[in-house]
Image 1: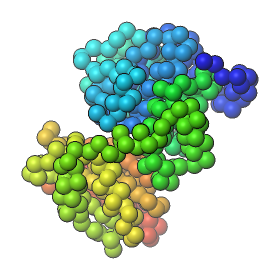
Image 2 (image 1 turned 45 degrees about the vertical axis):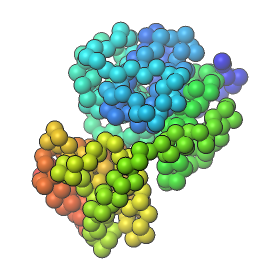
Image 3 (image 1 turned 180 degrees about the horizontal axis):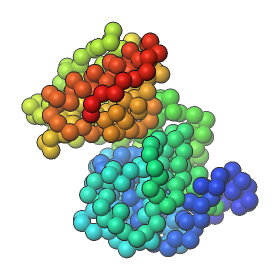
Length: 347
């Protein structure tokens, strides 16, 4: 289904980089649409919308992710085929990397993707630091979700989204805006969400699938984790950690539930969640509700993300990682409060 808006009007809103990305999407024939490890709602929703858009143009599209789709996104998987990486990639001439801009985020897929002779196109709303390694990019760090970018792409390509693609875009938006409560919710976000509802998306059904299908252990898990909370920096910093010794399966917990509860405390500005993994690493999730830049904090440990939501993976057990992260976070408060330049901390 094609849009009625003239092509000239659609193209006038785009810059040179976006125009080159669109040309690659137009002329490509076989597309591999890739996501990051543990693909979330923004990644999966954007994949659904882009795959339907490219299929509408007559292209062959396959979606492959490093990890399988969580059961709560089954409503997307019913109408969209999500493949899981099994050691080799399907034949393709364009690889589209959605919701991330570093190949390492694809885990075991990184090496075969790098070796593939295909063109690489990044569609993302995260900040990137360093040299661009891709062939083309459709990137806007100001966009609330990657699904918003896919919506722009579909419009620029003259493709009207069907209800399956609309569910994908809506899923991207609501998961990355915390159901419109985060500061990244802007006029475009609400306008596009409204458009998706007009196309047949049922917000109640999606909310129920995403947030009302938890296992019975979930509230207990959240309670145990919240019981480990420590407040620092005059209660402006809330820290919660999960060591392996607790015996809880961290992958079964939506960490946003814990992060949002702690962020609801009036004086808290920053929330850090550290979980220890069996492979000898720790995962950091950081959230901010003020002017504290958690992306800058995560970058000090090789991670990144957004100014108010970021993460990183650190080598070492929790006992070693935790004090390093806390030292950097507290230094960030001091530097912001006094205006001092940040001093380097060994990673």
